[in-house]
Length: 441
Image (tube, rainbow, N blue to C red; front, top):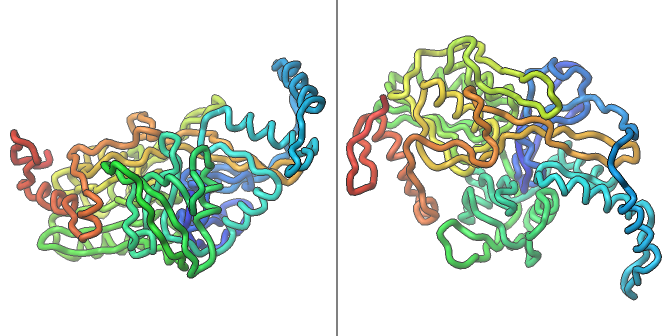
């Protein structure tokens, strides 16, 4: 992948190389077996921040961290430190904590106090493991996970993977992993437990929306091939499914759009369901095939008072699009770069959103290396839609809401796709007693 997305349980990621300047070196770590919801992730390892068009998963140059003065009163902290040293009774099965372990615990508590699931402290051993995950190839179950409302949640199972074949769905809550509760578990911890050797089994207790009781699902880990684009023509409707914003997404989309224009199809369904995101520049480049030059695709708002960054279409449009000709499908698995692109096409009135609410991942993380080989991943910015709406938490809401049940998914039925095609042809009827025929305007 080139720059966005995900935490995960996945596997096959291309090796990441750290370069200076314009080089991008991280593949789309789609939660197949990794773990940090990379959509919107920047590493402290590129010296020139804007030498690359702001990837979701970008690397920046490491900068030394120095102690700074603070107005915080640390008296109570040191009081508690001393009380624990004097009074805590070590159990027979535990060892006495070192000062280094106490400091690590204090830092973890400080980071956790911000209440952001994507801001994480990695002690030295975890930092090394995290770096290995980013740089290597992994086996896993083929899905991406994140934290939604404090719960470890499946963002998107990749099509054809063990997770998909097992019936796991975007939006499913993971209650336990191999019998271990996920309550208060970080994304990184969840990913470590879900991924593993090819051929081994992981048991997930999951909770589908609408279920009254969780159920156990056994998934056999495998090497995962990350798909990018799939095309199909149904009558005068052309369908492009984009599964990730990886390193080759723009090239694959360019080919798919060329195929679309040559097909003679009058309507287009752009399927972003289950797309966990990827490189920001991929979203900007693909958006440029739909939007005229200068149209805002996404805004980047920083917490430190820096001026807002605005990323605009480069104006490489393949034709003039209209909302009665294009439907963008979204669901709970559409996250980060997928939300950026869908939001831009919708807000500029070049497409109609149909499906369910998207995931709501609109933040950017920066990974900062610390002197003791630990690291901290910090949310440093928020992605905003062209009109300034935050993507985080609430996600995007479709103009036309159409759900797809787990039973429909497992049986191969796709009422969302059927509704998209009907909507484009003016024959979609909303499933209510006062339903009327609706067509995009």
